[in-house]
Length: 331
Image (cartoon, rainbow, N blue to C red; front, side, top):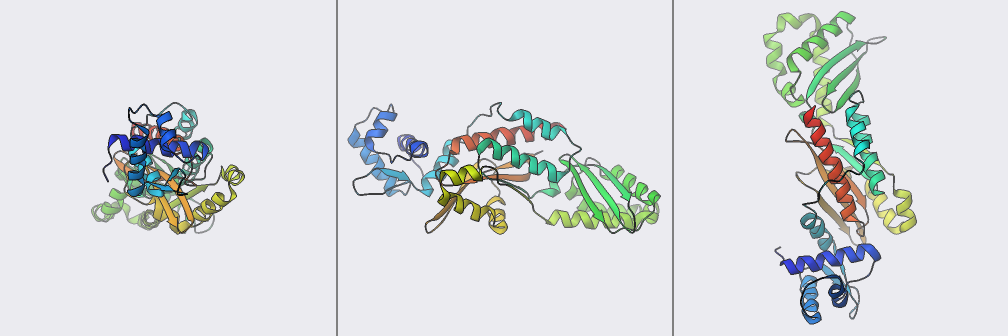
């Protein structure tokens, strides 16, 4: 829905004023906050139009207006697209992603924790682009019994998996060398798409350790179909203290894995907002994708009540996402 520049400015003020002090917006308060050279009557007409379009609603016949879910969504998606990254929280992000010896699970948890601390709201990271991870190294180590530990180095940390593989130390070493030699620098998706052809062309070379290779491929295939979800609930205490009713709505959402995946598993290429309404129940999510090498690897979502500080949250997401994308592309 197209809005004039004046309507956008008024809606912007309405959302920010309500977030700041829960005060419904009136034509008088807009007049005080804006440099628009128009009369109070004109501003009143603009507020009426925004209400008719579904961006604002009036709580009482003679009272001011407050933003609707549609108004919040428009604010986030259209007014925060050009936020600039600042230097806040960057040191923690750099330390996290420079330590490439960590597992993918640890890095994902670290990302969620940094953003949750920065925003004081629960944060969820969904890794839904495992096929876009770039392979760097394979290490397969035999354990006691018929088991092996498989460590797969990627541009986003190590994937670790314990597998039921009966193999000698030499077979494990040979399989590690083979997989590293032929797939280093390639994505998980490329390896999964081409491993059959590679095995056909190298059947004599890999015969002794083919069962090891096959099991590693099966493990990666399983991982590729999974959606790695990490929830950091820091900020919930502050949310409960601020408004227990809002906190209940947010906690209900972040404890529902299916709903979290539904909210975060999308194709957005920029910061966006999802505001779910179910009768009186409403929960907001400001989310952003992690893009590495032009491909989406994960989604980050900050969950909170409708009346939360969207600008600060979007700014924190912008900082972290830009830093992660920049650092990973340079690895």
